[in-house]
Amino acid sequence: MMAVRVQTADFDLSTEMAALRAQDARIGALVSFVGTVRDMNDGASVAAMELEHYPGMTEQALEKIVAEACERWPLYGALVVHRVGPLAPLDQIVLVACTAAHRGEAFAACEFIIDYLKTDAPFWKKEQTPDGARWVDARVSDDAALAKWAAV
Image 1: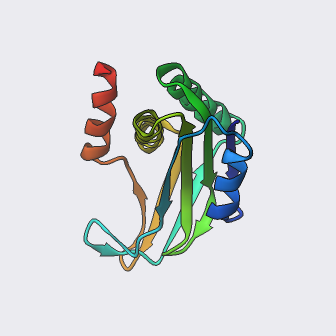
Image 2: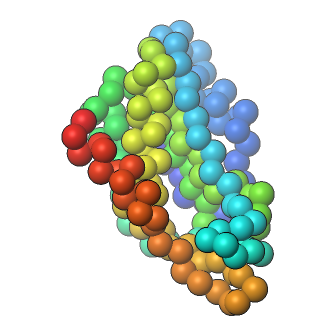
């Protein structure tokens, strides 16, 4: 199962993991990452975050990232669920999950997908802080994380 969803609704981690593994006895590893909204960023309090995207274009970009992960590692499944719209601290933003026969492939693919999401996926984040709204760019550390995959 390879799936990408962009949605406003929250997701249930247990339900998503069960669906990804459903009756596939080949799976020896399931690795997941859940990103959440923090109440602090770059030294400022964050009251809310809004994520914007271009419907259609965003899903296509996410599907391309997942397809590349599947080319690099022998995955049995990969799932990306990314939320858009208004979010509050503690809300879940993104789920990335990968299944494979072994943990190494599942961990690497999951990390690869999230590194690409942080830098190349067409999402725009705006935080509400005490000083007003501000757009959030990828961090230097996100770019560095992505750069390591060029050598792999």
